[in-house]
Amino acid sequence: MSAPAVAIVIVSFNAREDLLRCLCSLHAHPPSRPHEIVVVDNASSDGSVESVRRDWPAARVVALTANVGFARGCNLGFADTDAPLVLLLNSDVVVREGALDHLIEALLSDETCAAAGPRLVDAAGIIELSWGRMIGPFTELRQKSLQLLRRLGIPPVAALIARRTRQVRFPDWVSGACLLVRRADAEHVGLLDERFFMYLEDVDFCAALRARGRRILFTPAAEVQHARGRSASAAPDATARAYRQSQLAFYAKHHPGWLPILRVYLRLRRQLPSPPARAVPF
Image 1 (spheres, rainbow, N blue to C red):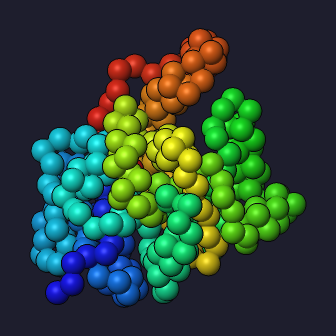
Image 2 (cartoon, rainbow, N blue to C red; image 1 turned 30 degrees about the vertical axis):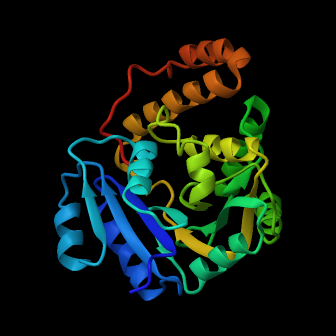
């Protein structure tokens, strides 16, 4: 068998049904290049490890004894593989026909790009705004406003997002729900920053890649389905805390001047998080 050209790393926590659906889609629509699949399980208690080992023996399982978070889980996936391309894939993603080949070819066709992301849609076909400019106080507000208005079904906003996600772009970041990266670039920046338990690790990772003069690619030719929010709805309080913890860590790293203002804002809204909770879904 040829050495894998692509390592597909799936970090999962108590998402057995989504994980099995993701693996089924990878079996139905695999990349044409030699590949391997590694599931990094964050100490799930729902039988995820047993189900994968029973139903998908070709997938390698890294079964952890504690929930170490998404960034750390991805880094362990990198360490367990050696393919030149690594696809970070959420367990709640369903791969569509040809999507991974389109994503791989798009990245390999442009040597200036370190990473690439596809267009993400939900089960109803509604497009997710899965890329953008570097996160800061104003860009974050704009991104969240667009997402809220899209969820509310405001036609001009939905049309705007649809138009913008039909074009190849070189944004500051693409979503970590499905992110293809060259291993050499990832290793050069030290992989993902493990200060981010979950949320914003993808934006930070892309910022590190761009800091060494590399570009990030968004390609609508590749499209995958992302059940965004399903895991969060299972544990909304823990998920909200995890987001705020990552937000504080992100501003401390990239926008330290804004950090005191963010802390005051969160305190006034009674959303300033306590020390990190670790039983959080992805």
